[in-house]
Length: 383
Image 1 (cartoon, rainbow, N blue to C red):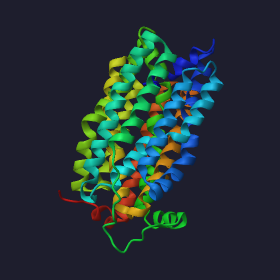
Image 2 (cartoon, rainbow, N blue to C red):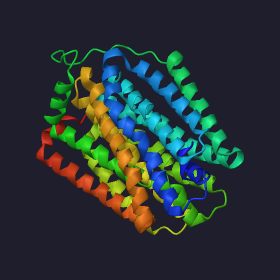
Image 3 (cartoon, rainbow, N blue to C red):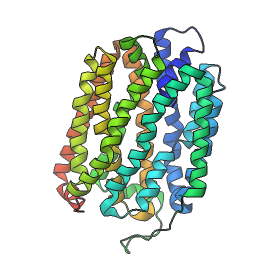
Image 4 (cartoon, one colour):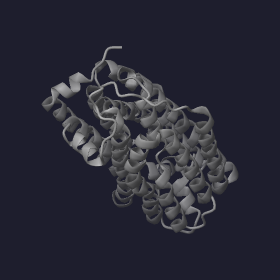
């Protein structure tokens, strides 16, 4: 609800230059993922040991408090440090993925995680538009505080609406607990798994490079009229494509193979991202964002399902935590990269660089699949 106008919120703190706003939009957006990067494996390991429901509750209430306090900020630095603090708790969706992955049979993991992604993206679809409307009607501070209420409510839903069942590993030869050294060794010994996790980094860099400056790009294309609302539409277009395709991609990947579909989606995302550099109207940008969401939306459940297949049950939370940590590193690099590129070379440069990055990731994933064909074929299931 608040991301579409984060850069506009920064503008409201003073009479700043455009370059200053672009730079700080990148840093304020990305700093959350510094602490998220550090804490994700810790929460994953704690979740493996004590249960993931408890971590979800902590995340929800920590996020709610952080967002509420952002509505009270009156300087860029205050907003910066509150976003840094929020990163400690920014693991609600990844921990939800870990919870559902470990409660789901392996052969339908892609479909089920795609369903979770659909629910997540429904919020991402509605949130920016609703947030834009609220910001235009009531102001930025009130929107932050209203958003915090919805986050607190999600924590209450977890407390009273979710029951976590202790699952037994389908492979009785696997241990019931692993040290962090054993988890890292397991990851390193599986080259396709390593590449999937590295791809997570580059996908997040590409996807998040445009996020903090999107509203500024919309302003350049459309003008200042109802800017928060139209920024919300541009954000939500990706969510709509994601919503329509995430579960479908998960179901197809369950049947065809996770790695093969991941390669296809990386090439698709790279190709559809490139025309964003040449758009001349807000509606052209909306179409590009929709197509991007249709491709990116499948990558998240497919890569999580592959990790679910590859890691023993007792270490899945920690492995997913490392993957989340790598994703957060990308979330941190992406906004800063996008802010600097747009500040020095213009908005189009962001689309050129991110398109290249996605295609390069697809090539690297394809080569790794060819060198390890058993890893790709082994994980295809018929359902």
